[in-house]
Image (cartoon, rainbow, N blue to C red; front, side, top):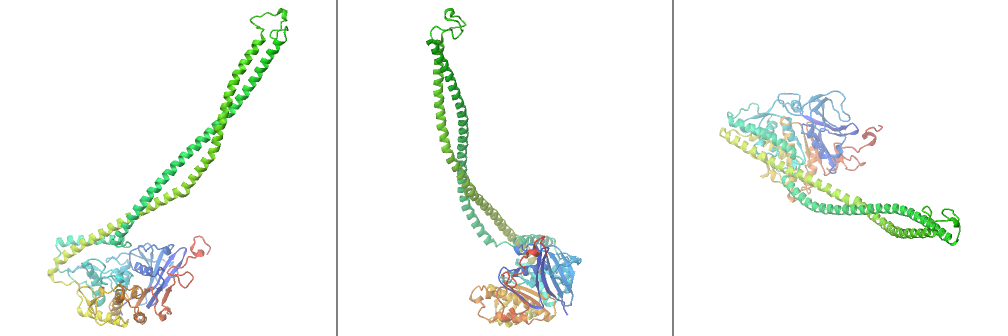
Length: 628
């Protein structure tokens, strides 16, 4: 009995998250329901756990999960679980099946890269389980071979929603020309069980051949690196359209930004001017207050001096009116009074001098009062104007803080984001152009290699017509079992490496029928290998095979009026334990399939059935430090 593998469970684990677990049974498994619930992410994760490059897409629901487990078993009864970090890297192999919890025992580390000289890698481990260890497959017309990697098989059994509608052969990886030879050799290996180990090179390799091979190898590495980068990018045309839109948006944003900056500068200038006027007014008012205090004190001195001088003048006048009396100055009696240097003896002169001094002080006092009056008028003016200026300043500052500055900040941020996005899009376009250039160079080199070896008459892949016809007959049986419309003739064309149905190339159908026939190709291949007892992983995973029921290209691509949906599921429901399929669909399967324990519905609604792949966050379990 040929050994095969089965998927048992896929699960995500994180230190503060509930395990996200999906289980699988032999035969048919169906996951259907709402969009954006993680269905296609299951397909991506299975491919990732079969050696696909990481890391996994960083979707919000995946946050908090650190490891992925894929539990598997062989048809010979061996059970094992593969563990891997969500960021990629090597695998850890554990004996037994694990899904609800992470294994606690120590496992065996397996490298994620295939290495034909070692056995401690995932590819070698899985190939050994299938009896395909140390097999070789042809890679060009000259007969050069490569070591078989499990990734060569994975691309034939895990078909995502993008691959299932591609307008190319299931044996094509989207490259140019010669790159499909290895895929067809793997296809031949599965159909016949015979690899290309004994295949000898068709001719001696010249130095030119070796140079071309080295260049092709380098270009393969560069192309692989560039394809990693463009994996999550749109196509070149879409990027160019996006760049045009971004540049248009940046132009409009630039105009708005210039207007906003002008408004901000004007408002800031006005604010500075008003603030200076307020500051100058406050300073002048403070200065006036100090001057008024001093001038008031000076006025009090003037009044005191006038009062004293008025007393002196009045006294002098009074002494003059008294007649012959003792001298008020020296005290001499009238008869002894004599004007000397130390006593003028004329009180009237003193009174006159006092009155002159009073007049002088009165003049100064008048000037002082005028100045005080002027200062008080100026102070009142400032006291009236300052509140208005302060209110205008506060209002303008508030407008700048609440409207002008935030608007300018937002526009600057938006412009910066547009500039960053524009840079990313330009970089993406450059990557696309670089990838096309590398692929063109590789195609030319492979064409030169093929032309140089053409004289040998060696075939690309020596798959016999009888074997290809047997496979096509199995696929025809699958399509008829599904009630595919008007299927009569099916054959496999080695030239295009694809099915021809009723004389029409499979790639000529609309995307919905391409999805159905791609699934038929994969199902037929597994059916053929089981019947003929040839190698095959034993399972297939298909995403959105019934696209014609949801998004048909047109009337010819629309299967909604047929019963293919019912017979499609009936066919797989009849599969035994020796084969397995996982069907991912957005459309509902028939009622009997929905009621089956091997069908799971993702509702997309929290609290209603199973919402999606990842459970709803639970504070008691998902928050660090929470009480369990």
